Amino acid sequence: MPVIKVNNRDVHIQELNKGAAETVLMIHGMFSNLSVYYFNIAPILAEHFHVVMYDLKSHGMSERTLHGYDLNSMTDDLNALMEALYLNSVHLAGYSFGGLIALKMALRFPDKVKKLVVIEAPDPKDEKARGIIDDYSREFLEHYVENFTDTTKVKMGKRQMERNHRMYEYLFYQTSIKSDMIAEKDFLDEPQITLLNKETLLLYGADSNCLETGKELNEKIKTSELTPVPGDHNIPIQEPVLIANMINTFFMN
Image (tube, rainbow, N blue to C red; front, top):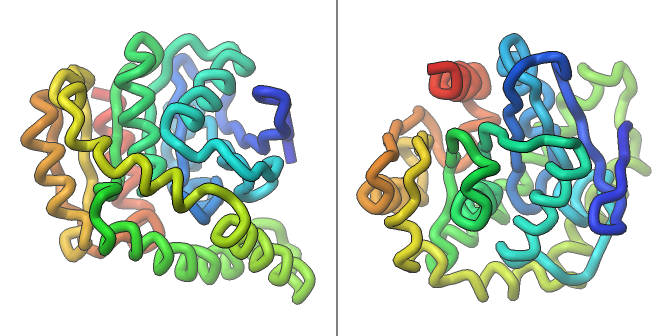
């Protein structure tokens, strides 16, 4: 498992099709890891693109840290990752809180983002939207365990399961992750959102509690297109092939 130093911390990354002309960089949501893309979505994108995935701090196999889960810190990390990988500009896709990171990246470092895909980004001020991230983490863990054996040919044992649960408990109860998310409650109301001029694809579950946020973003971002997808907040898990094909078509056109 490749681990590189970014801002003096260990970051777990995965890359597919390094020789492709253009790069798609994918950001997972809080309380998950890069495998939400790795098993089904990334291989489809890698037919045409260099695909880069990474575990956010304290997630997956990246180094744990107590603080720095606000959007400025997260995009500083992403910018440093791109520099470490010698990536000048990329197509960017983010899911759930990763979608907010992607939006912030496009606002802070516009020259480094070509096109943007935002999947199920919640409104940080919406308590219901924040709550479904907790639900997502449970469904994600089940999905991760199910696919772990298929991908690695190794059955995940009790010890590995316990490590995963400890990671979630660490994030929930020891880090500043929840307070940092709450501190971003006004992010989508900031005037700079309306100035975003990147071509943006908004993918939201037709039955998701976050769909209204997608509609609001579609109104604010003049260069955006909103596409509802069958499912709820967990559409990358529920409809991975559909999601991958939609992202593929958007970035290729």
